[in-house]
Length: 194
Image 1 (cartoon, rainbow, N blue to C red):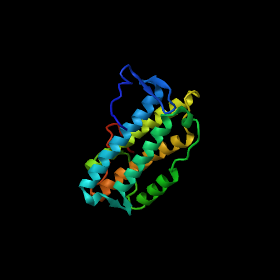
Image 2: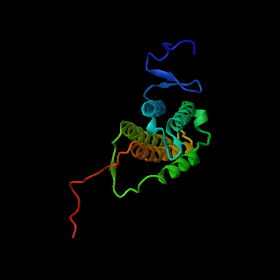
Image 3: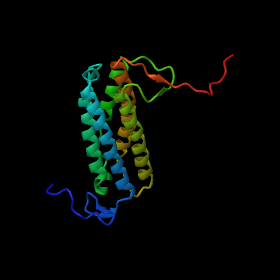
Image 4: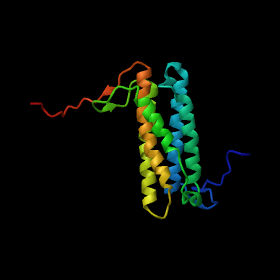
């Protein structure tokens, strides 16, 4: 990159990976923009982990390293989605790796007996923000794929679904590493017993 600003987007259009020009509010640009937002949220989670070394290794999972790997995969996904030609191709994403990490961390976590609130340690809260943003990215990807005119690789949608699961478990792992219990949801509308 020789210059950050090019002035080519000043009229509300941008270039896609295949060279075509589209409005900046197009569904495709919105989707990979949300992926960029998610990547930034994970960058904040990495920074929070690096500030507190006690959080960095739960169940033999080096969380900053894992999160940075996920950031790279999100960049890959954004690159694929920015190009309609590449988006029409099925490209594998490392879903199995996320599942393995989930299984590894869950072994050392207490079982969930009720819903929990996003919160606890700041790094945990940040992972919950990333998790809920991942769900938005996944919804946008599913909606775009449903149009049949804006392809999204099926494997990418599956990976996004698993990523949100991973981030939920990772958030719980952060609280566990910090010695903080999960924050239980307490409903005012709980059905009466007995």
